[in-house]
Amino acid sequence: MNSQTQAILATDKRIDGKAISAQVLSEVAEQVSQLQAQGVQPCLAVVLVGKDPASQVYVKNKLLRAADVGILSVEHYLPEHTSEETLLSLIESLNEDAKVQGILVQLPLPKGIDEIKVLEAIKPIKDVDGFHSSNVGGLSQGRSVLQPCTPSGCMRLLKHVCSDMSGMHAVVVGRSNIVGKPMAALLLQANCTVTLVHSKSRDIQSLCQMADILVAAVGRPEMIKQDWVKPGAIVIDVGINRVEKDGSTRLVGDVDYADVWDSVEAITPVPGGVGPMTIAMLMSNTVEAAQRQHALVSMNRVDGSRESP
Ligand SMILES: NC(=O)C1=CN([C@@H]2O[C@H](COP(=O)(O)OP(=O)(O)OC[C@H]3O[C@@H](n4cnc5c(N)ncnc54)[C@H](OP(=O)(O)O)[C@@H]3O)[C@@H](O)[C@H]2O)C=CC1
Ligand SMILES: Nc1nc(=O)c2c([nH]1)NC[C@@H]1CN(c3ccc(C(=O)N[C@@H](CCC(=O)O)C(=O)O)cc3)C=[N+]21
Image 1 (cartoon, rainbow, N blue to C red):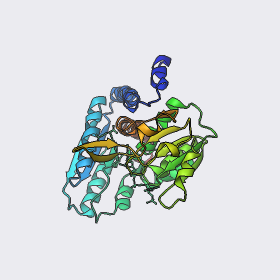
Image 2: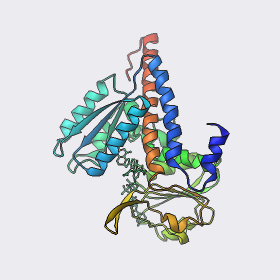
Image 3: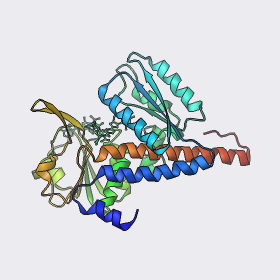
Image 4: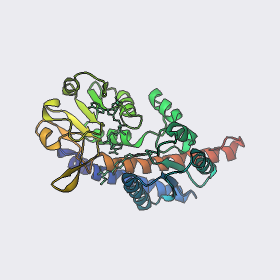
């Protein structure tokens, strides 16, 4: 990225996730071309069980972005009442398919299917969501593993407005396995002092007021107001909430954007903030998975060892 683009993206208070994700996607497209030149076509398998309307929209957007950057995608749509066994055997066949380097099982899964069991069935090297315990453990140890897309997207946005986060107090609201916990791990790795807040925390407002970096991943529309935010804070709003207002549906975050605007140094909008970054990082992880698998295959050809990707 040249310094002029960096300046454009960083001068505004609004952290433009759409523009920054476009940069990530153009880097990914370049990496895809390099892999293709080596005879590797990156391919992402997306598995959707049931007909949850929001999941259908997200999956469609992921497939569109994959096509944009030259990543092949294969879709597996399974009916709502699919058994856990059927899903596990699909994952097994995708694990064994050398043409597929990335596997994503869209969450949430229908009731009756053990989410952890399903995520654990995905080969860690193909786990482009970064949800397998081996990748989760690797992240907390600071190893170079496939990282969860939403938190790594948030880190990328933060780096646009803050080149060194060392010593800053980061408060993350929400402790889910897919957002809050890995977000805290990444902030810790960036040398922040991290507070992880959840529904059982006491006096959440005071904890938020202490934040130099505030990350909201709660799922409560516009919960965070101006008097929760320290003046000059950087705010990353992960929340995606659909609210009805005057007969139409609007998308809002967990932060009251208009209310906090005057206080903050920088803030991500909803939509157009973290959401597009999540998808861009998924493409980036797919390419990384393809590169790692290609390197393993090449290494095995040279030394004849039996380890397979
Ligand atoms: N932009 C993107 O790319 C993505 C956006 N999202 C959005 O982010 C939001 C969070 O998602 P996700 O992490 O999956 O959600 P979960 O519902 O899994 O987790 C929500 C977390 O918030 C905590 N919480 C709930 N209410 C409160 C409260 N009043 N005060 C403090 N903490 C509270 C819960 O605490 P406890 O653990 O105690 O129950 C829980 O840890 C949602 O709006 C979701 O749609 C999610 C993924 C990606
Ligand atoms: N295995 C798995 N991996 C995920 O990463 C995963 C998941 N399951 N389940 C659901 C959550 C949610 N999530 C989003 C991705 C993109 C947008 C996104 O693109 N949002 C747009 C708006 C989209 C709209 O209009 O609804 C935006 O914020 O601008 C939002 C949310 C990924 N998730």
